[in-house]
Every structure is written in structure tokens, then in C-alpha cells.
Amino acid sequence: MSHDDLNDRSDQNDFLSGALHGAADAMPGGEVNDLHVSFGVVRDRVRRRRAVKVGSLAGASLAVAGVLAFGVTQSPVWNSEPVLPGSPTENVAPNRSAEPTPASSVIQDGYVPSWIGDLDVGLSCGMPVDDLGSTTDTWSATSIGDIYSVTSEQGGDPSTSLGMAANVAGTEGSLPAPPVLVWSQDGVVVDLGNNVFDGSMLREPLVGSAGDATEAQDNALTSCAPTEGDAGEVFQTPLPEGDYEVRVVAFPQLDSGDWATAVSEPVAVRLDADGAHSPTGTRGGDATIEPPERVEGELTRMVLDRSTSWVSARETQFGYITTGTPVITAECNSTDPQDEVSIEVVQPSTDESFATFDVPCDGERFVSASVQGGGGEVIDIRLASVPDGVSRFWATLAPNADGGSGGGDAAGACSADGLDLPHDPPSSPSAAAGATAQAVLDAALACDQDRLVELANEYPTELLVPAQPAEEVFALPEDDALHYLTVAGLLAGTVGADRGDGTVVWPRVATEEFRDSNEAWDEAVEAGLLTQGEADAQRADATFGYTGMEIAIDQDGNWRYYSATP
Picture 1 (cartoon, rainbow, N blue to C red):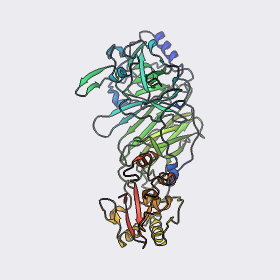
Picture 2 (picture 1 turned 45 degrees about the vertical axis):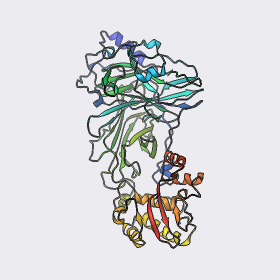
Picture 3 (picture 1 turned 180 degrees about the horizontal axis):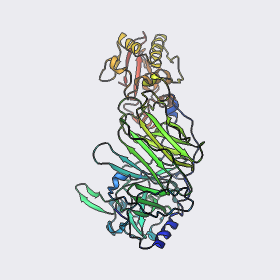
């Protein structure tokens, strides 16, 4: 793939000079966060993505395409790569083909994607970029971050999405869908972004999420080169390598019911064989660390490189948590060794972070405590705060190479190790039930597999649905169900209540008496049993209510069951 033929160097320099406008400003570094690894505190860091409504301010940053998605085979490097004013190094920039191909040659001029046509906002492929502007003065959009990519390599062909941090603000109506990235070259619009009206959620960006940023979304294939498929519009054509202007475009719905556009100022983006890049400007510097080779079981990798004229920011997803509790391993170089990069471990389906860590930029390898949660889906590593001096950063989510928890001893194989709990001894209206609850809690906190199995078999206890033997449920090292953490959270993170027949149930929100209690629902969230989104959805369900994990002990002290709410 190649870019539009740059016949003379003066044209090239004109573009680069213009590209610097609005791109030399680095993403502001945010406040660093304390390291949270204890139960309950990790969940306190969970942040819900808020929908943009009247008077709100949200930033938009979306995942950017990775190298594999572009399908590029050529990778010659310019011999005289122009160095941007203020660039901290003269290192070789990302790979660039020598024979650019104009993007206008791969698009269908005049084409309007169906979802854009439904909005009736006057956008079309091939339109003059001078005609691309906001259609309302009650909303604004601003690009505030570097472009980045997220590539999924979980079998089959890799797929890549793009993102960029943005602020979107309005004083009327609402923003029902995320903003997109609209691309232009040589004064012509060549990509109108992806379809964000297909259920896409407003998300925080993966790079530069400090503050009220939201993710502007796109993928590696232009929506201006359609092919007809069985399901309608199909897009399979990547934009060629080259230099582009990219704008954040939001589609607010006004109070009148009409749709409008809020369009940002353009920022420069370069596409080459290594992906998509924003100008580095005055940020970054020399780097000495190198990302390691991929290890067996590695789940997610995030790499940020600002050691050349063009920023590279890429996340790659290899798999999801199925067993055990992985750790974050990371390194950071910065012009100021006192800098720290604040990262969040994020569940994409809810856009909630369930662990946060601050990585020192002293060039030393950082290994976190065990990351607990996020089972059953891929996990994102979000760079919430990146100081301007950071030149290179990498982080992986993978099993600890040393076999431990990263933050302690061999007890790291047990998810209840080192917990700080609000109700120890357990809160129970029945003395006998409270005594049994204390015994179970003590065994869980001690990671005492034999004692937990003994207690479960004594009564006997029904474990899970369908029923499973105690020897499997409480086997160490744990699988991703994290039963030790869950048992401890239930008994010492929530309050027990009589369900009406003398049986005490934890959490109390599972009883009829407390199913509408704000405090009871908050307990379940703070104990890590539910995310806030799950709690909101279950509370709104008038039929079932709470459906999370539950422990029941009868008035005689018999441990009746540990399972999802029957």
C-alpha cells in the first residue's frame, strides 16, 4: 500500500508544517493513582462510562488499526525522513513505502454509507473537506490524544480497530453513539468512520483517558469502498499508506429530534507498514528498554513508543483469562525517572476497570500483584495517565514468569491472600450461623484448602449449580472463578440477613427484605460480587433481582449452599 505521489519536497514540507498544527500538543499527564490490590479496594477503582448528555463533557478515543490489519507487505524506509520541529530524537521513523498511492483511487466517490444516510447530515465519500464542518453550534468535538490500535489475534485472521481520545460537549439533546474518526487526504474525504449505531458503547480511550475523555472509534478499513455481501454493506479495503488529516466527528441528536455533526479541527496521522501514528512533537526522547518476546499464556500486550518522530501505540489481544490469576509486567523509560504511568486493567464489555497500578519510569521491570477478575473475555490495558517525558512503555498481562503472585509469596495461588475486609467477624443475626460463617471465613482467608473441603463435606454443602465436589471447587491453585475471594467477600464484605425461615443469607440483597435497599446493593458492588452495571441491571429486574453468588447457613449452623442465587 502507498500514499499519494509526493512529486516535490516543498509539497511534502507544506503538509508536515500543517500537520504539526494541533498535533504538537502532547496529551496531558494526569494524576497518578495509588496501587490497589486488596479486595474491595480494587473494586472501588471501577469506573462506569457515562453517557454524554446535555451540558456534559466527554473525550473520545478509539482503538487504532495495527500492522496486521493493513495487510502491507512493502516496508522500505525513507532515507531522509523529515524530523518534526521539536522532535526529541532523529531516530528512523516508522516504515513508509516509497511510491505513495492516492487514497482517492480506492474509494467510491459520492458513496454514502447506510447509517450516515439515515442521519441525513450531508456527509458523503469524496466530498471536499472544506464542506466537512459542524452543523450545530450547541455541540463541539476536540481531538486530545494520539491514535492507537487494538488488534485481536485469537485465532483466524487478525482484526484491528482504531481509537483516539477526544472531548465531546453539548448543551442540548444527547450523544447516543460514540464519535468516529473521519479521514481526508488532498482535500477529499476518504473514510467516514465505522458504523457506531450498531450497538457500540461510549467508552473511555485506551490511551489518554485522564479526565472526561471518550473514545472516537474507527477500524482499519475505509467505509468509502463498499462491496456487496449477503448481509448488505461489506468493507474490506484499507486506506493506502500515506499522510492524512483526521477529524473527530460526533453525531448528537438535538432536542428537535434532528441529527447534527460536531467536527473537530484536523490532526495529522501517518499510515505505514507498522500501522497508524500521530506526530510525537516535543514529547518523549531516547529509549533503552525493549518489549520482551511473547511468553506462553500471554493474554494482552500494550506498547507505546515515542522515541521517534511518530508515535506508535498498539494493544494486541491474544486470549482471555481461563485459569489462575495473571499479573501485569511492565517497563517505562522517561526523560524524568520520577515519572509514573498509571494503567488500568479493563473489562471491555462493561468498560470498567477492576485493577489499577502505577508503573515507575525508572527503567526497572515492574511486576504487579495478582490481577483478580475479568474471566471469560479479553482484557484491555488502559494507559490512563502518560507524562509527556515518557519515551517508551510496555505492559503485558500474563502468568507470572516466577510462578508467584507478583506481590507476595506462594499464597498468590489463592485469591483471598492478604484481603482487607470490613466485616470480620461476619455480621449475622444468628449466633450459630455466625460461628459457622467465621469458620468458613477463617479457612478462606488462610487459603486452607483442606479445612474448606472439610467444612463443606461436614453438613454437607451444595456447591454451585450443577453441584460440584468440594475438592474441585476449592482446589489450589484456583481457576478463574476465584472461589476463595468470593467466599471471603460474601461473608466479610456483605451483611447477612434472615431470609424468613431462620436461614441466614449473604449477601442480604438476596433476601426479599433488602432487595430494594441501596446499602445492600452497594455492599454487593463494593465486595466485588457485581460490577455497578450488573447491579443496576439486576435491580431493575423485578422478577429475579439479585442473581449473583450467595452463601446460606441455617439457624443450627449448617452450611446449606454456596452457589448463584437459587
